[in-house]
Length: 149
Image 1: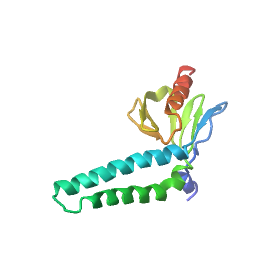
Image 2: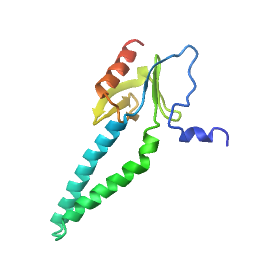
Image 3: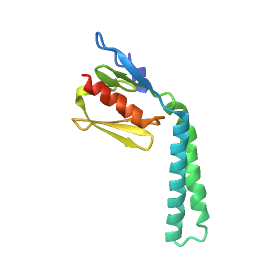
Image 4: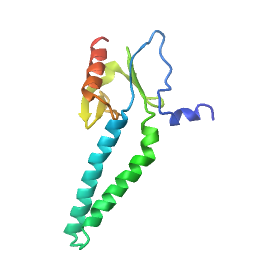
């Protein structure tokens, strides 16, 4: 089927509107990716050990091994895809992977979640710009673009 590959694209595939221009491109930061996964691994290790301690398992330490292994496998498995994601901020929209297109006028809330920036629309749709090297700068750029519309 024509266009089927667009649903698997990690970059914006939505065509620009006439006269629309890209103000900034947001890409993930490898150091932020690994730092977030290190924190996630630490939490998984602690929760694994806690679960085994509550279950009165004499091998509580295996919870740490399991938590670390689970997060490490996931981190290495999806790293290549996550590092290809791109969001483009235009003077009219925020364009994300595949066909995601969020008109700036529809953005209701911006939140930071770890190294990610969550974009919430007026209709309740939520999008994550993950592994940003400077989430405050990402939010400031989006807010400035909204103010200029």
